[in-house]
Length: 367
Image (cartoon, rainbow, N blue to C red; front, side):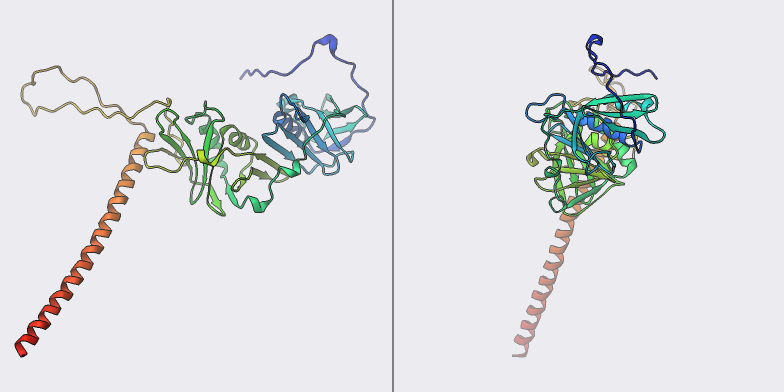
């Protein structure tokens, strides 16, 4: 399948001569290449105060860092051939599939460039010597600040990544969605026009720690899933943290006031049913026309004939109606139990009164 992708380029006459390459390049694992590409995707397109358009290579710690001020990606575990921290130009082209290395890749440094070699390709990333970069360690919350944990099952992750771009409210500012970490893991989005919510329940996933309901930008949760993060940490008034091995993905949630609580009238989609659709329109309604009256063999009554057919419900509508009915039945059962308890209590009181009256009659007869 043919695909197109845009890359930033420069005019040919302005391309400088290729810099000198170090005689020896250190051999690093092939995972460094996607780490550089993902950090480049995380870096800002424009920066005002800090050099957020750059990628940071932390020599002493062995980390690749990218941030745009709203999201932070850290990939550690590398042994870089220098000890200080270096800022280099971001280069999204490193994520091209045909650049993927089968084995190790070469990495070196000159006074002005960091050199990356993979297969027949050699890239010289210019070093930004004047730029200032934020300290990533101060952004990552401590585990005590994120006591709620969520493990997203791999099948649920695939399911959710498919459903997220189709949820209602995806075109709103910040595309707010609610992540509910309680007895069940659920994601909710609200229809901005009529207030109806859609709820995606991840039945294979689990949550532990204090229950938490928070609001986040759809794009960041979707990116965490696409980056392969299956473990999340969260806490009140704290950034969300996706963690996997030596990788961390951190982003700030939205205001908790926008979080959507569960409701019985929400369109409910469970991850075990891949065929459950999401309404294609934010203004879609369930309509249940009255069926055509039956005349039991009699002559057709006067007036125009009814030719419309009842609208067919999809699985989502059936699930929503079932959930509503279940809520009504549970409420009816609770009321029935209370009434039954009250009747039993009244019967006991009536028997006690009858016993007392019988005792009084016996006393009067014996007097």
